[in-house]
Image (cartoon, rainbow, N blue to C red; front, side, top):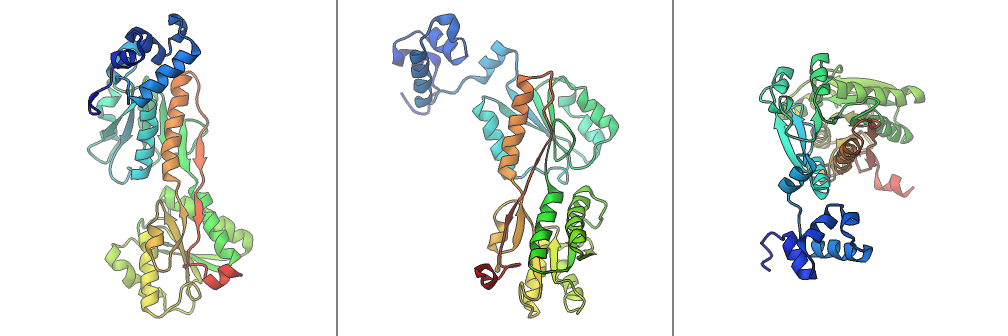
Length: 344
């Protein structure tokens, strides 16, 4: 058989010398109605896998009354907090269970644009993932709650049906690492948002202050919304000061990179003159010299967890699933720890 052709139930039946009805009932969970032995069921499933059989989504939809699709609702670029690793992991986990993925994107930046989505007017998916960065308004939340399908909110923290990452814990983890190295004057550096009231900034700053207060350390804030080319110039305004912090936690990796490059160009040594840490969602921090110590967001696991929560709700539609908050993990680089210190 040509490897590019779709494998059918009849193809599997012909290979095994049995009817396609037996194959269909077995692969669709109906073994008890066709009198198939456990050994034959295993053989059918193994043969189907070896031949590359993929169930027809349309056929399964007709039999089950389900669309066999999960929607992901996103809005503006600032709200789209799903990295490629998250999307790939989520789509794969859904696909492994026979579900396709439908992406719904609002055209503008307001909640009114979200509410215009066709998804909110007709049931075209079986469940919904909502990627929303800001705290939703009561009206928008009520509209989503009225949808006749399970919903999991992403990047939001409540008691049930939500999935997030522990930004506060990540910042605390970085701060504790710096405190263990003896730093007592630390700074939170933010060149991207410009406001400590933004939820992400507030969570990270709170985690940093929690750990610093417990250790009796001082935390200052360096915050100004700047384009990338302007960040090095601004860093030159405070790096020469004798009162500069001995360590910083940068809100973004690009800000950390700008500070590291500027400090080195000014003749400062990392990490003896200045220790730098930040946040990352991949391997970019390792491309720097020295590598930047980062709290790493678990993007792939975030995608798989979102799919698992959806499956739990589809299997038990009358129940909710507990909210889940995933931890970051620490990747230590030369921006905070020298080789000599590591050896000790």
